Image 1 (tube, one colour):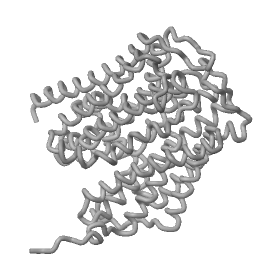
Image 2 (spheres, rainbow, N blue to C red):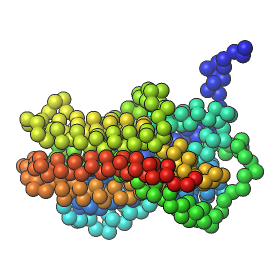
Image 3 (cartoon, rainbow, N blue to C red):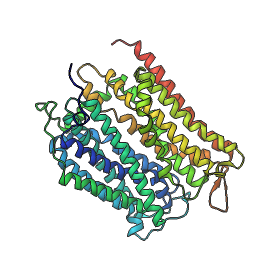
Image 4 (cartoon, rainbow, N blue to C red):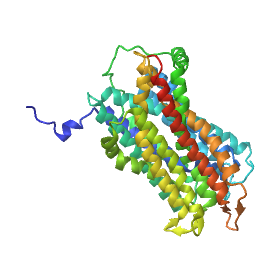
Length: 455
């Protein structure tokens, strides 16, 4: 009988593993310092009703689509060089996001207007910022995940569990830091300075501590070229079953993306003038950290497709609860510690996190089962496409649902907030709920159809 490993032996990994995770922590802190406020900030810069959510959707799309290519580049030039490049791009991107206010002479309005009033001095730096942050962030995840894969020393489950935990810790640190800085200074634009500082910290970790790990998996594995990647993309997307799954599963992420599109617009324009969206969306990583092991132990044996369907139902129903405060005495602005509408938004974010716990991790397992034998790795490389598709569609669609449906017949109050027609607002929430439930149903039908097809 062998002795159980000590705690120190259990968590012993090479230095590159821990330094990679520290880099990831700072990068995620940088991203989530500003993520909850992008649509509010861009609206107050004069980008109107549509551009803020559309550009935010493009940003999320780049972050989750480009790793298909950036991961290949990282394999060629090395993880360390790729992380240097990523940090430089991120610092530049976050700087350009704040540039219109810091050096461009722009001031943030109290509320976003309906029409675009921003000129090239705002649109050009913001567009470049979206591009730089999207490209920079797309390099980080394949480099960090690749390092974890090469340094897990046969403890892959534990290693990737630590990695996932670090992502959420970084999210918490970034949101809390941004909240402290912006409330102390009484301005919104300093959140991008926080993002810059966290990106500089990530750069310093890479410069002083991080070293490329030696491949412990398959050092003889050939590196794919960009043309081979593009050929593989045609091969993957040419698989009808897999392409159909990408479409039906993207509905989950369409709803998830509204945490950073519809919810900030709803709270800022109808509930309170200065919402703490960074703290409100903190319910997502906190819920994941607190309940990840519980959900895994209780429901880990569910078949992957059933778990994904359950998660998609939860994320759809999470939108539905926002109908309740519309019809309560005092409405969404009635204060119960916080405005009632904000309290229900926090509950929505927490419920969405529960949906994520059921669905997100099992998505990889199900994609692996869809892949032709011997091509599992190729297909898993495209596992982030549902998030990319859901984000690209979710940005403009979320803006349309909020501005054209929820705000139909709204009355502008002297405070600057909108008083929504409860029926119109409820219709918007019901549409989002129906989209989530419809996505769950389509996933269920897809799986039933797939079981009847030849192997």
